[in-house]
Amino acid sequence: MNMPRVTFDHWQSRLEAACHASENFRHAFTLAETPSTQDAPQTRDARAGSVIATWRQTAGRGRFGRAWEDTASAGVAATFVVHTQAAERLALASAIAAAETCEHALSNAGAITTVGIKWPNDIVVAGQKLAGVLIETRENRAFIGIGINVMQARFEGELESRATSLSMLGSVIDRLDVLCVLLTSLDRALGSSDETLIAAFLRRDALRGTRALFATPTGPVEGEVCSIDPMRGLVVRTDVGERFLPAHSTSVAQWGGRVVRSLGT
Image (cartoon, rainbow, N blue to C red; front, side, top):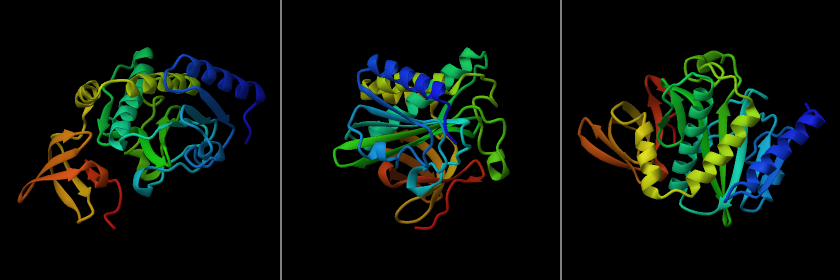
């Protein structure tokens, strides 16, 4: 499936204009179709400061090898390449940028709603996933993959109760507009102080005060989330006391009655 030439050129020119107005991004690449923007040849060869976006992604990836459920050309899929830095900070800045982008799209449509962050990288509304972030590093570069559900009218199967889209929440925003707002929001977040990022996260924290099951290298841990330091980890109150779970090796396995991933090693 190829993107019409006029649309391809429009996407490319809009992204280039957004890059020229940013501090962190200078080069834009628009792909008609790719399995994943994280794995495209243009991404592997890209230098820091590049943005790789696609009209249609068919096999996106999430954290810890999870599949990102693509719905062809209904969502936004992009990878932003920056110089290597702490993955936890990049994940925090990226999640905040994605949440702000979704809030912008919904508020412009008059569908004002709270967009939350389910630590560490899921963007949620009323417990349903709206967007996700994946951070990977290679050599001296970090690759920030962000997917946002935009135009989906519904989700099938088990995703029906777990996922939502900007369209389903009342927004009629164009995917390219979402992508350009995302680039601007991420550029701003990357330049923000740690204190500013943490404060922005805490205003949107959807996990604290809820009960969840976590996958860790030493086995599953279940309990109530007492506090979260998004750059270090979280404190969970279990049946045998409080336990600190580090950010780099902890994943949410079940939350709100929904299994997020298996607990296998």
